[in-house]
Amino acid sequence: MDYKDIIRNIKSKNFENIYFLYGREYYLIDNVIKVFKESLNESMIDFNLDVIDGKEVFLDQLLSSVETLPFMDDKKITIVKDFELLKGKRKNFSEGDEKYFIDYLDNISESTVLVFTVYGEIDKRKKIVKKIQEKGVVFNCDKISDMDLFKWTKRKFESFGTIIENAQVMYFIESQGYREKNSEKTLADLENEIIKISSFVGSENKVTNEVIDRLSQKKIENDIFKLIDYIGEKNSSSAIKILNNMIEEGESVLGIFAMISRQFKTVLQVKQLQIEGTSINDICQTLNIRQFVVNKALKQGRNFSNEVIIDMLNFILENDFKIKNGLIKDTLAVEILVSKYCQRNVS
Image (spheres, rainbow, N blue to C red):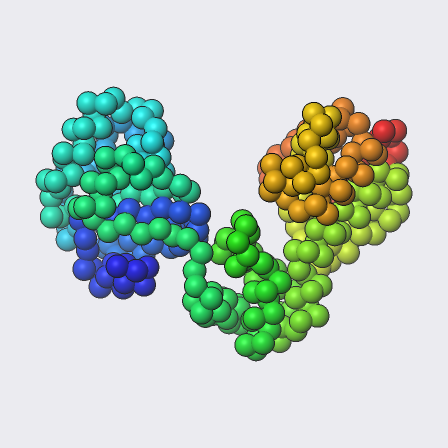
């Protein structure tokens, strides 16, 4: 059974007893969970849907949920998110608990739908994984096919009222690198880029290659590199200028903070590996990043001491909290960051 069949059967209420969805495409997993919720009587959903944290659940809690009969609906749905046993871990389950639950899966009530999800990899050697494969529907939510990706992307743009031609859909997909072998991009990342582009062009306006280039992740990455370089050079006017440009083009301050933080963490890792005598090629493989990024991190590392980098990371963390809790205006926080670290001796 493929992904489309799973969605179609849930919508038509043609349920299986057990489902297991895992993989790196969180977007697909979360979409299935949403469809399961929509399949229930909305007025009775509190009685007929349990969403359980699989990292913390104990056997008796899980059995209690699974054995509860539906109330004024055909099915009771239990969703167990990130179930530890399926990843080869046994946090709250003894060996006896695990064996009991494996046997129990043979006797689940017809009125119960049990859904397991794991965000990431699973341990396929585990007996419980093999039992679920035997008794239920198992699907690896990995990268979608080229054709499905094209249809999904076009549909997403159009859902925001944005006009986009097929050629620009293909151009956007290529610019994102989703299909590249080692890419960590997910559909959720692509959706964020689609939202940004759609917000920038506005409803009923057409997406062009120029707009895609202007708002592309590669350009943003380069802007972050330039911003950090300017801070290292204590060039506050150029740093503020590039910051304002990024904000005008739709980047959120929290997003900018996150990218600065990620780059400085890379700088710390690269500096440490270089101290240990690791070659540039091996650093690229160890950190799974391009040589250009490694070279940039090495150069930036000469402009910032570890103490200053850690101080800046703490500043970002603290102000991220303040912004989210309404304690400081986001633009003021990022301007303070530039001003503070352009004025002090950063090396």
